[in-house]
Amino acid sequence: MGAQEPVCVGIIGGGLMGRELAAAIGRWAALVDHPVRPELRAVCDADPAALRWFDRIDTVETTTQDFHELLRDEDLDVLYIAVPHHLHEQLYLDAIAAGKDFLAEKPFGIDLGAAERIVAALDERPGVFVRCSSEMPFFPGAQVALETIASGALGQVIEAEGSFLHSSDLDRSKPINWKRQTEYCGAIGVMGDLGMHVAHVPLRVGWRPQTVFGVLQDVVTERPGPGGEPVRCDTFDNATLHCSVDHPLGAFPLTLATKRIAPREMNTWRLRALGMDGGVEFSTAHPKTVRRFAVRDGRQVWEEFEVGSRSVFETATGAIFEFGFSDAILQMWAAFLAERAGALDGRFGCATPHEALESHRLFDAALRSGESRCAEPV
Ligand SMILES: NC(=O)c1ccc[n+]([C@@H]2O[C@H](COP(=O)([O-])OP(=O)(O)OC[C@H]3O[C@@H](n4cnc5c(N)ncnc54)[C@H](O)[C@@H]3O)[C@@H](O)[C@H]2O)c1
Image 1 (cartoon, rainbow, N blue to C red):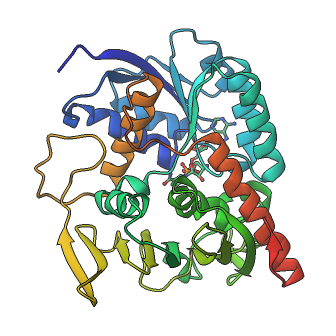
Image 2 (cartoon, protein in one colour; image 1 turned 180 degrees about the vertical axis):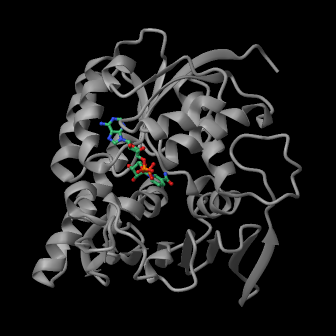
């Protein structure tokens, strides 16, 4: 392995996802050959209790409640910005103006207008390297699905489906949080939480929806507040987007489902695509297994094979071992930092700002469709 270039990292938003990055950096040595070595140097969070969690990490020199401190810190090479959605636009624009590279959290702005303004600012500053978080396609099975689709093995596509499904909101007594309130999460609701994850692969393989019919459900309308009092829970819980994709070989339906209330499912990301010549399906509910379909000698053959732990970047983890969420986070960061270093070498990269913007265009059209109850152009 060549010498690894050190990269100093600062986190803005030390909540659930900020801690995930800290843990991924702690496991960086698992990557067999990576051009850079990130070091977590600074953390900003508005909540002092969130900052205290980072006391366990020896490399952290700065903890602060003021994100401007991180933007001014010339020793920081890269930021991870993982804050509630209503803060995305201001923080991303400030980071771009400060010339900081960063991995942004999805949905990349609270709504389409915010995403457009962020992307416009980035287009003005091409030297600032920014990508949008979406780690699920780094599951080895998802990579096999993506490669199968990109190879053209499906022939004419008949139909495709991508889903990201949760179920903890089935519990009506689960307390309210910012992710369940339009003011902080955005009117797109669950699409803002889970939508980039299902849009990433279809957009990467060139499946751009032309129209969408959105079935949007606000299933649970109140949740207990801090004192147990009912608080309005005004975001869509489930969104099923029936899209039409134009393709030179023939238009086909693409169904993208994002659900907080999908009984049984726990962070299940699924991709299924069927064509006249072949097909593929993968679900993180069965993280080791990919199913593939092909027509052989006139027969419809489905095969099933185990994929193990090999993803985009090789790790010390035994190839036969299982892959999980934290491995996907490690792989996403490996891709982000390799691409930033000019060393992605044709491997699968993180979602781009323009892909994030395209996902917003889809969600916005789905919102319009929810109102009009008609299919809307994207
Ligand atoms: N990629 C994924 O799989 C994934 C999973 C969950 C959440 N997310 C995204 O990550 C982002 C954060 O979500 P989370 O689950 O970590 O939320 P969280 O509520 O756990 O953490 C957010 C943190 O931001 C802090 N914060 C709020 N205002 C701030 C400010 N002005 N300055 C600094 N810190 C501030 C909060 O105190 C909190 O600690 C969101 O965009 C969310 O959609 C991504």
